[in-house]
Length: 345
Image 1 (cartoon, one colour):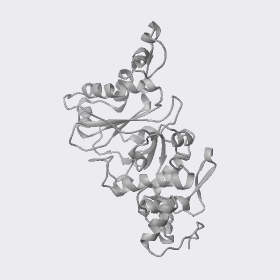
Image 2 (tube, one colour; image 1 turned 30 degrees about the vertical axis):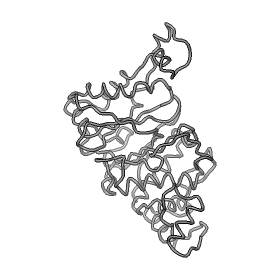
Image 3 (cartoon, one colour; image 1 turned 90 degrees about the horizontal axis):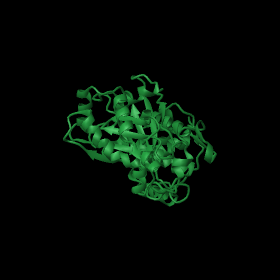
Image 4 (cartoon, one colour; image 1 turned 135 degrees about the vertical axis):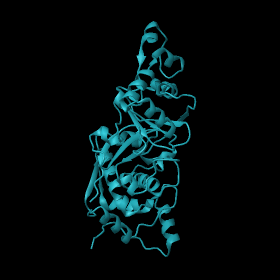
């Protein structure tokens, strides 16, 4: 029998339990599932974890994140026990120095943890990679992402207005979790770019700002679609704030890339070369300081440091000519995306 260490609270009924979670500040503003011992134990057993097992250590906060605390928040988020391996891998990734938890979690810039799931587990859990991929309607997407945000708040202390100093935030801070559409993608699955085999399961986390959607129904070539993409993204170069970008291509644009024979590397190279911007144009737009000179007219600012800093992903509905890009958080040496294997026991 698993012995839990967390403090227990006695309530009269379900409504009282939900109200208690609100009173204690344990919710994200939406009602949560009361974490009973039975539900917590089921979460731990699904991942073969002991309650006291440390899943990660958040250095800047000096916080040990244990399996029991993660399981509690997964229950409150509405997760099924079989979701736990994805959540565990994500918690491990959050502690990676490349991600640099403290910066994106506390900044006024307001990033969220974008999660991309690859491998057979995505279909096994019923994760959405198609229509309305960033929207509502899929329990796995919604609750896995929500579990991470609740854990950040309740275990690490990333509370709005206290440690979380986001000026605006965005809806991804409730949940920001999708699967890649590997079946229809014109490219190998994203996690294979990180050294994983297609049959392995993996989650990639990315400190992400909001989703920027754009449309192009006029172009039948990759260059045509990406001209629109680059025009939308170019002014972001002026901030010198985003170390990486996620680029999510939906169904019709996937088909354009496939028919054009463009690899993921082709897309990265084209966008890297065509999103560069004159420093003088940034000054004219008041996104860079200083006087406009012949030198600033000749100085070119790239959007990211290398083509590989553009994370090219296939997801979204088959109908429609929309795709999107998602700026990352941080300065040129800021938070980097991290990929971890999802270990199914």
